[in-house]
Amino acid sequence: MRGFSAFRLLVAGLIWLVQPLPALAFGSCTDPNYVKTLEGATPTSECEVRAELSLVHGRGTSAVRVVSFTSSAHDEDAAWIQRVERNLADIGAALRSMGAIGTDDITIVLVGKEAAEGYEGDTGIIASGPRDGRAECAVAIYKRPAGFSERHFDFLLAHEVFHCAQFASFADTEREGDAWWIEGSAEHFAHMAVPDFGDQGFYPGFDARSTTEPLTAMSYENVVFFH
Image (cartoon, rainbow, N blue to C red):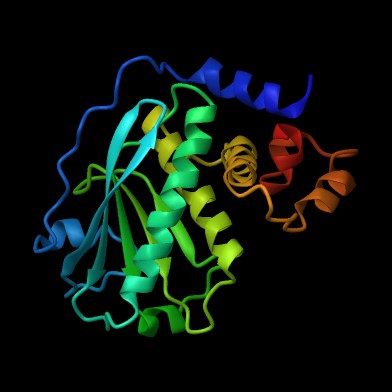
């Protein structure tokens, strides 16, 4: 069975998809209990809405809002928002090509350069599922001083938005031990949305490890399984 068929069967077999997703109420940027759920927030942070966008997917349309923290500089936010809006069209098209798969509403957080300078993660874009104090998926974009290459940003954003689709469809998506399909399928989806972006180095890793290790011992490398 070719990988895309396996990917579609896995997703279709696990999601109860037919009903449209309910509209969610976004949290208030002046509510500290809400703001503290957002990646990059400090105990005194407040946020403000910078743009209101939408994502059209296989289950309807989800609201997407872009926020930033009031303590951050906003002079370059317009360029970041344009990049997000441009990508939502391609991400939505890729989701629709898979059938009735969609996301809940999404808050995209532009985290200021000051916080990005101290960020030690690998990607600079992070999705987190709903939790106490926040009903929607949140995707944080650290505005790194060095920036992202254009297509690398597109690829990472698609990967993280697909995590929002996973959060909307599965219970306990963030639980330990499920990285093999959570990260592998999100990486595959990012290639669907940004097909001209090359391998991030996971193909050789899959080749080297898959002869002696089970799929469940790997994560991003399993993109090969879903292809």
